[in-house]
Image 1 (cartoon, rainbow, N blue to C red):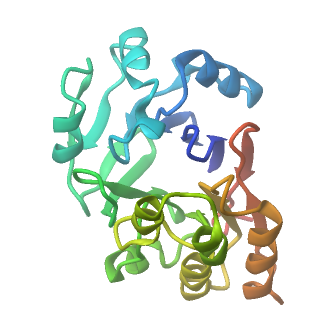
Image 2 (cartoon, rainbow, N blue to C red):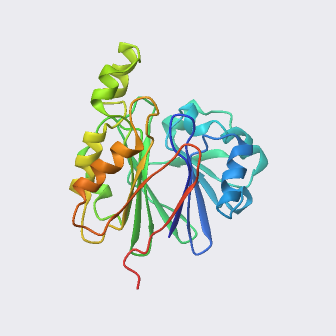
Length: 256
């Protein structure tokens, strides 16, 4: 499998997962022009997408979805019933996701998993191709036991490292926003995410990608340092996704 993180952060989120000619788009939080530019940078185009999957309705995850849907009316768009209510009126939206129920697109199985975020019915995704598993988990205030169970055994884990708790507490945000971010339906702190990675780590984990970093309340260097500490002694690669530069990773899933 190959994963392209086109953008990750509060300014917009989008990723493409592909395997053996099947390509799915996860979130569309970039303008259609930006989406095309980022896809072009990794050698694909919007016309290559077989289906789109939406985690939740917040603008940084769906900003370009309406235009994408108009430009590509034959591409099915999958979202939960709750997310669909919030996005009513977008052409192509109508394929309903249920947490724990796999959707099969070409060679990929896509499994939605409920998250704890202040949206109508948000989900993370685990994507499978044969024995290869990729988990994409952002926008959740806590890692529930269900999430921990579903991301266990993934060969690639793309997980939110939104903020450092001290930087958030001492930073310039209004107190109400700080409470929202740090709450149980907000975003994962570095400490929470590190514990999640530690719990999910296994001898076939290949790569961990830190996602959705706050530009005001975190730094890539801090996240990389914490990840390397918790993964010390292993062969797991550590990557930090960026808001502006695409990141592509290959996931072997035990293949020789």
